[in-house]
Length: 436
Image 1 (cartoon, rainbow, N blue to C red):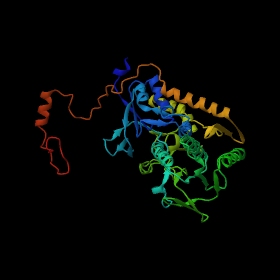
Image 2 (image 1 turned 90 degrees about the horizontal axis):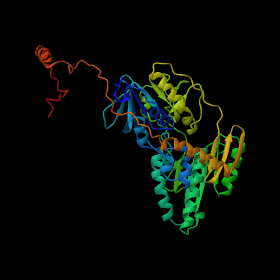
Image 3 (image 1 turned 90 degrees about the vertical axis):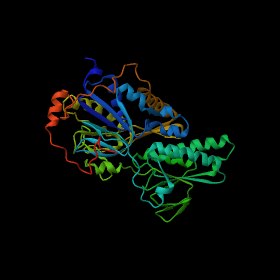
Image 4 (image 1 turned 120 degrees about the horizontal axis):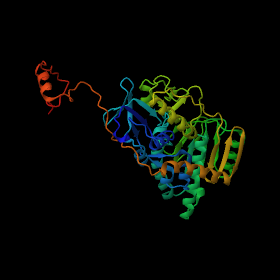
């Protein structure tokens, strides 16, 4: 049977175009499921690949190289693409809610929207700090900061709050790019002053001592001031206050601390963590609502908690795809066990990287070249799609009879309507014929 002519009987909605969901889209483009209508809902049509963002900030990649355009990928998958932000989830009626469009019904829902900064409760942070997420908004702010730095004169103080891998990579990438830009315009890059603030006793608390020692050396070589075991307690227009009483000048403050979920997820009734992340079982299904799957940063695998990292979202792509196919075919999903240890390749701004896995660490330019090949190979999967005909996103929907009488002949319908009592008029209900 021609897949395009198969009536739709099941709606699978993918919320978010994250690292796991792009694998689902690619799979459905290669092997469509007859009768399944696929819909992608995303606030953004360009999804960034987190592994290449430090390289983009440092100037090693352009925008297109490190972003997946969801539009051709959705067309390839035969999916409808709804470019909109979700603001609610009605689990009683299996619908996604929007501020500016009608609700969207689903039979199965998969969420891969990533995380966002927690509510910035530090005084002044919401007004003056630059959160690293959502990434698209951060990149707009980054472009503004580049212009400000290049147009400035005299000392310019850059502070990064958060000394995990994300904060360290961000600082080194920003420094590499801005120093290069200033040298190109015959300006002195040494007028930029850099400070890394860590609330933990060490930088990179999730990594082994060898990795921390390497980056301690790199940061010192780059003239970056590191403050550990202190937290930012207040952010002002040109300074920050620290928990030890210090006050530091700060022209720009990057906020790279913690992660949280959109408030509507917790309000939906899904079982979530305190931070709002969807609690899922080993099959990546919600522990409270089995019609909902979740992966990536937005998910918390109850039996196998892992740090928020893009590598886990990438690894969850194949099992998510397999389990969605299983439930759509009426089969039980299978358990997935994420790896305990994983290889991290952390860049240092320049084409140089540090490898970290368990208690092992090494460094070198060859690691950056290896990381570059891995990242480009991942992007190629979703940027260079096979020349295969995709199924139509507007395939005929199976008529689900709700008693409207649309399939009844005119004579029979007229006789039935004539015997019906007059409808009760209510002021709060506006009907199509009576509306102004």
